[in-house]
Length: 143
Image 1 (cartoon, rainbow, N blue to C red):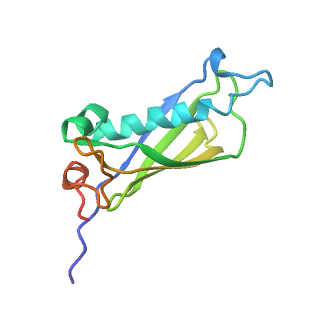
Image 2: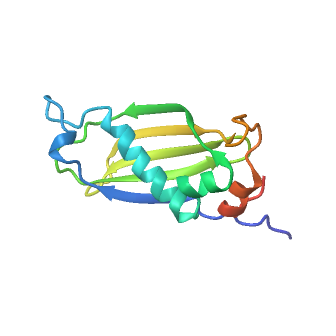
């Protein structure tokens, strides 16, 4: 019996603690700061594959976020340790990264989200309708 080749682990998890400046007047993390937390997780994930933003640009592509969705399940509070897991779920025509934010101590779900990025040729500023092979090579996946 032939087995399909195993896909590599396309995820990364970070832990962070919200600072006082992240909190709003209600005593919880201001909703806009969740986007920053996603960015920290996304950057760690892309660095894991040696394809962070400077590497992307050097390979001839920009990868703007063109869509983002967040679902707030529970509030995050000052000094609450949280874990943010970022997982690449699509890489053929676009780069889709899904996120799960949990309380570090209890594992309780706090937020889910996803972002979608597309490849844009740096020289022509044209959007690519298929992700460039350099992404697949860095991730160790097939289209």
